Length: 488
Image (cartoon, rainbow, N blue to C red; front, side):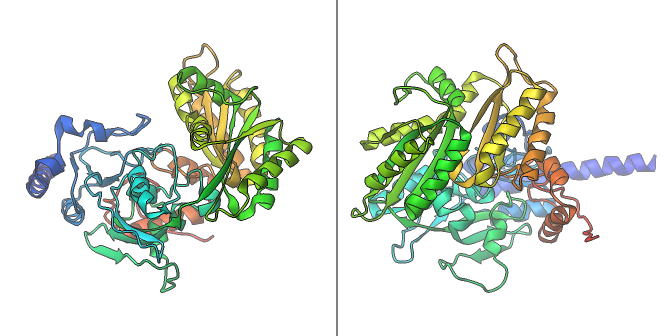
């Protein structure tokens, strides 16, 4: 009886605490900054509509420290959210009564510094908006991905995004010079230094890149910029198979070297789905093929003969039997059409119906081997399954997406088994089952199974050290409960 009274008292205390927190947050955030009830629905579910429960509310501050401090004092979970374009459920609440902390009102863009090649931005800046802001200055931030019209800088940092130009410019952690982060207790780490060389201890800015909001909230960043290319050469190329595509990619890296900024691949199934569901999309070559590559060279000098380099590469590829057809982009509109054919691969498959999405990376030389082995695994588990691999040939990143067989509505129990088998295959090949989307809520079990206990325990100890109350995005990336590390 006493235990029941204690439990009832605890629930009453929790309700009072939640009520007090709601009053506190709505008080200093105002009606624009605090959303509750039905107003939280646009923020409550992830992009794939797989994860998310109704939160206590959505905080939309212009500065986050007070929100984090108030939630920590009340013992309420904080879920940082950028554009909510992630695919692993990291930016929505996993438990009721959490506060989603939206960065959508933190959108200031500072003045770019061409001498240091940097720019300060707030974490809520949309990637495409940053691209537009840099155009008059002759500078670029070289991160490009399909969701750039809605993805925000804080989310890109939190997931350590890659994108289509990582081959040349690196992933997000390579493009971040400095960070400002609100820690779980509400204190602020100011690491906004616009220098590339800073070896004064641990590289803290890299620790928060890919942490998925589990260690703190990124509020501002200093990003690394590059001069805008003054010329481009782009080609859409057809290869007879994935092995030929890998071989041609290796040739291009040797021949085009530092000018190679994009090396993408996709297959004919994906092209067919995109053409089927996007009627304004046209196929730009005379004949369809098995595998397509999108190749782009860029340079800051107009005196480098990029067209000659790319044209020679295509000729050599044809002579070696690695290329069967191709076309050079003759205008910016032509180039944009090539890129759209690649970028609409996910949309075409989404419009076809239910799908399984896997984000795999392997060493680039093993990409064809992985695709062949994965096809055998998937076809054996679900005969007739439609397989659509596409992605970043230059760095071995495969978006390995599946559509059910013709006439079949879904995947049933095979979905989990296929995911486990593909993760095991990638791990055996020295790759990763989480190339650029992170772990979120979706892939914690995969990480626990396919990464060493030492590695997982180190992550759990970092989490427990920086967030001992487990209020920062609990249930994402690692089990929030502190664990004892063992090196046995």
